[in-house]
Structures are given as C-alpha cells and as structure tokens.
Length: 142
Image 1 (cartoon, rainbow, N blue to C red):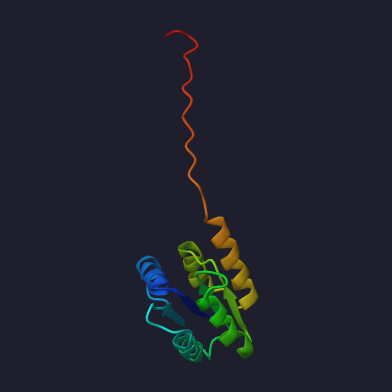
Image 2 (cartoon, rainbow, N blue to C red):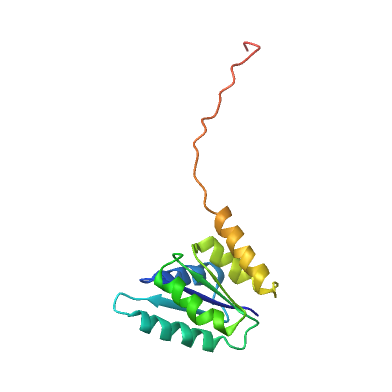
C-alpha cells in the first residue's frame, strides 16, 4: 500500500484527518504532520522525517500539503525527494484526501495515485449557481 502523509500550517493536517476519520474510518499507513506556530522549520523537518521513516515499508509515499511554496510543502520536497518514490502535492482539500485514502486500496502506482489526487482536488472545487425554476403557463385553460 502507498503511504500517505498530510501536512500544513497550524492544525491543517490534524483537522483534515479528523474529518477523514469521521467519513471513512481510521486510515492505515497514514501520518498527519502539523506545522504548529511554536515549530521552527527544523522541527517540521524532524517531524516529516519521522513520518517518512514510519512509512518506509510502503510502496511509495504521497505527501499532501496545504500551500505550494509554503514551509510544509518545501520541507516535504526537501526531505522526501532524496529518498525516492515520494510525491508531494499542494492544494489539498477534503474530497481529494478521501478519494486518495480510499484509492490506495486498489491503486498501487504512486504516479497514478498522485494524478488521482490532483484531478479530484480540482474537480471538487465548485460554485453554487442559482437557477430559478421556469413556470410553464397552462395551454388548455382548464
């Protein structure tokens, strides 16, 4: 199974994890790494390294982060890529996380799971549009 790490600023990772557990149950081969206000980048690096070590027996690791270019994203890239078979994606949302978590049961190729994450994340950003119902006028007068 492909390992999964969620990381982000503040309690982003633990918050999404809480929602994931409520909807889909306890995830396996999964680690949430928050970047707390009290953390330095060195603390974040230590926690991401620990998470990757915990998932070292997985068939690759997908790291989902909040902001591209933010410290969690950059640190995950810096710590993860030298290990090989690690992908890092930014812009994580809950539908993406749920889809990827469930998809790991049948998707065994990291690149394919990464594409699934990106497609689902984009597809689930929607805007509600109000469309009034058109009332039809009776034609027979009865």
